[in-house]
Amino acid sequence: MGFLKASRNLPKPLAYALLGAMWCGLLGGVVGLLVGLSVYPPTAWFAVLEIGIPAALLGFVAGLLVGAAMLVVDRGHGAKPSH
Image (cartoon, rainbow, N blue to C red; front, side, top):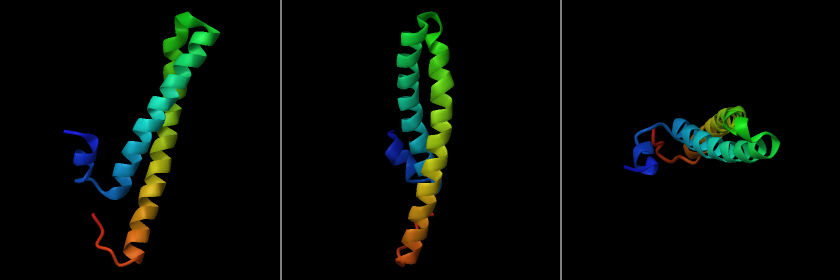
């Protein structure tokens, strides 16, 4: 079961928050790996966490805000909200 199918049962802000956390955390982890390998390879795994976790938190907050805005826009246009 994919994320998109599972997220249909979630409120829109939470679905967007989880999606934002997932993608930003993945991107932050890759950037952390590249930075860690270029600075000091034996501790590159720590750089993945050091950059990936804050990126995931930032993505969660940004996704939550976008999801909340989408919910407000949907209600403003008279559309039936998903949750």
